[in-house]
Image (cartoon, rainbow, N blue to C red):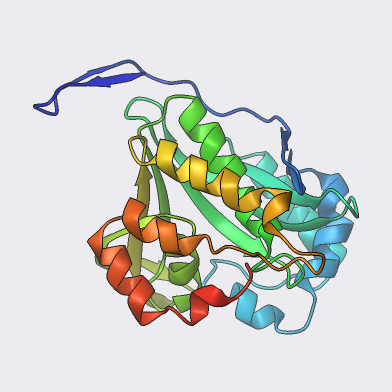
Length: 248
């Protein structure tokens, strides 16, 4: 819990860690990653262009369902990561995964990472709702800051971060070595003070009333975010206006 005054002083109490629980939305359920998801995820991650999806991750595309099971078992044994499968409520199939990671209860900070969507999930309202559910869960626990980090060469991830309301903060040069190469890391964040307005806009955009019979959004999500997320994001929107007309 955070109480701040005008001088930016805070009265801060540690928050609890997020737990393995199902987070329910209209279009997706976020289920704690389990071996039962391996079949669906192998089907998703062995699709065409799988190398592109894994290009910036510290991992390689699975060669078999058994590889996916091994990946899941490895991370189930690692308390530093809380993985969720993104399950389509209409089909009951997992279409991707992500993790809550670098969870810092003392400072109220967490990160969304290991984001890997299948082609059927990327740039859909289900993907947007998955991020919304994760962010809403973190801020409901009292966290101060939610981070999104990616390889600075990963233009798709950077666009997604800002599309979802994360503000760009800068580049950590030669931050990591991934697959034998230097990685410059782009940092983005949403703060607790940003979330109430962002949450309202997420809920408005995700409402079934905002979609036509073919699933296209009738009103855009990102135009209003320009006002919520600051001047730098407004410039980004102006440069990328045509991109934001797409469905996601």
